Image (tube, rainbow, N blue to C red; front, side, top):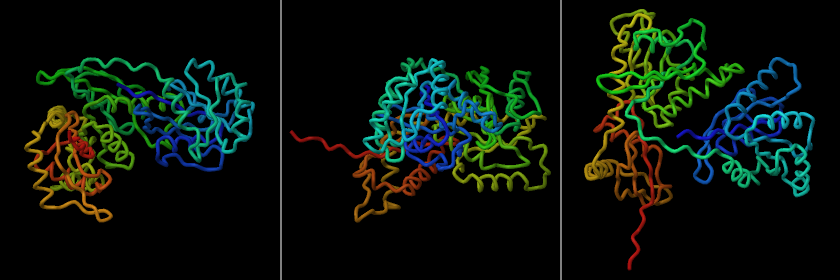
Length: 442
């Protein structure tokens, strides 16, 4: 079930990025007093009252500008508006209604999307009263807030969540394994898909960014239905151009969200980049399994230990992926492409491994004895028992005396020990720490 998308739009320097950071709880957007600092959209996961959604921060919207850069920023905001389920229109409560605000409001009224009006920078009672002036924009009740201090954001989010479209009924689980083929532009995603299928399913071009949308292809592998999803290239945010390419980035992220396994293609001559690491982190955060595929291996000059050294170097660049399989292929020549789908099937099998509660608790007691949890403030973490709550991906619930005593390094220790026994190749594990609920005595 896909999460609703909320786009934050407004004129420059009204506090959109500050509000974005406030709502997602992290400083992802650059905040500056200089108008137009945010020139590319940012994406983040947020949640309110148990309802998750995706938040998009956009650059300042200047409808009347003819400057080339500002035209690109305007195009970004328009794409975000088209893609969003709800639009959060932010205006500056200090300056009052401006001509640009009125022009943006006119555009938003024509979008037929739910629009929530946030009047920012209303820290004082006088400014909160002045927020009523924004009724003239014709977008309903204005919500006075302070993104900097967080005041008023609760009422604002209540209204945002109320505006979400009705949740779609979850369809019965398809037995097909969903595989997203992702990576930077021109790394060979479409060529790999065509090589796997043995036919020209999608256009293959030397021009980066040919694939603008996510394309699903259903096949069968050893009796197992598989859906291959070819996606547009995910490039560094600063290089995302206005218009269709930005729209396709959202599609690529959505493809990851709905997939079981992602094939992340890395260009062999260049090796893993920072962007590859970011995409890998996103894949793991979404609970999607991962296979690293080093493409264009035919372009690498070989010596006796080239592959082993390249493998070691890749894992040193991406140390958080040491449990992820690494394949070397050439989609152009077909070299070793035949190993891709069997590896995916193996990884999918790891997603479905279930460990009995008895076995799990026996192992955890042993690990606790070998390496006791560190203490915090004179208190030590106690693990009472563990159970596997679900598979796909494997999720484990640890019932403890106090979840706040859990140190991230100790959680990693437990995960590493678990992977020593049950490999969970290519599959992220989710650990949840909860307080033990004591039975009430009667």
